[in-house]
Image 1 (tube, protein in one colour):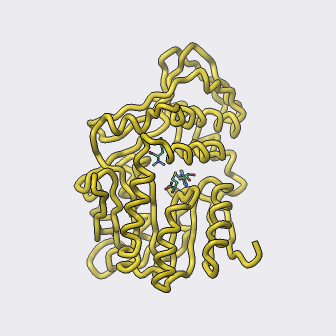
Image 2 (cartoon, protein in one colour):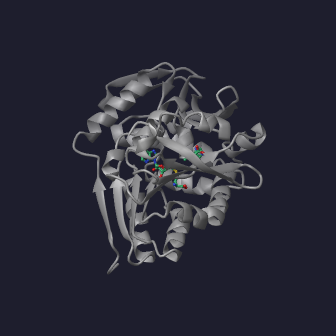
Amino acid sequence: MPGALYRIESARGEGEPARVAEEIRESLSSQPRWLPFKYFYDDRGSRLFEDITALPEYYQTRTEERLLATIAADVVDRVRPAELVELGSGAGRKIRLLLAAMARAGRLGSCVLLDINPHFLTGSARSLATDFPGLSVRGVVGDFLDDLALLGPGGGRLAVFFAGTIGNLHPAQVPAFLTRMAAQLAPRDGFLVGLDLVKDVSRLEAAYNDGAGVTAEFNRNILRAVNERLGADFDPEAFEHVAFYDAANAWIEMRLRALRPQRVRIPAACLDLAFEPGDEIRTEISCKYTRTSFEALLPQTGLELEHWYTDPENLFALALLRRRTSDDGTPR
Ligand code: SAH
Ligand code: AVI
């Protein structure tokens, strides 16, 4: 598109295939077996996630989008950003509400998208650059757990992390993740974090066990992605989708359960796995928060809660965090 201003860079270098093989070797050799959730998001998985967002049972996306539409101007007014950064940007739709609010406030400057999926990232960067003339768009293909430093120093920055994707991290990982994010923010920069809230178990479980079976397909797709990346021979149809709420941990857990005895070879990871019927692989946790449980993760991170926005039904929250000023004794 002539005039559209965007560039893409990648944190994933030559060592990437070996790193992936090692990561998958380790997780599938653990007891219980598990897989890192980022492997859901090959092109098919990213499209399946988009399908999930439109499901009647999956209230999260439409609730967050509606909430964001009502608060975008307030967030822009509080943070006064010139740059918007989105972690795990995916199709990059919600960010448009904030870009529009920035444009209305005469603050539209630049935008950085960071995502593990290069094709979705490029598509989103291109369409944002086309639809917001004058916006400078940078796409970074990278891992929000390892590559945040690529964002560079903050200053006039509002970072956003939508969808409740922070809930896909184990709560024990969250303070370190927030501390790394704080390092990419200047004092008084903002970080807007979407959180799915603790609620009725039947509503939560329905969102991960939809009637059309899209979530089941998304779950099984992780095995196709491993086949594709590492030459493995998983038969995804030989596994059933399992998703349930673990109230003690306040998370939804997704698993794949073997339906029959089978062997799986993953040559690139030097693995030969035996499964008996009922054997499981944990593929995702999706933590559900309360204001109190989320706030408990903030001390020592360099971030503090400035505002807690939620929808009228209290289904989903957007927590506006601010980087503390460096002179109040918190770690830099
Ligand atoms: N922000 C979008 C998409 C959320 S889905 C929305 O609100 O609907 C989660 C997104 O995070 C996907 O686009 C996926 O590709 C990306 N993702 C998952 N794990 C990642 C990781 N470790 N690092 C960077 N991006 C990741
Ligand atoms: C991206 N993430 C917040 C979604 C979630 O709800 O945890 C991924 C997902 N898994 C199953 N359905 C959607």
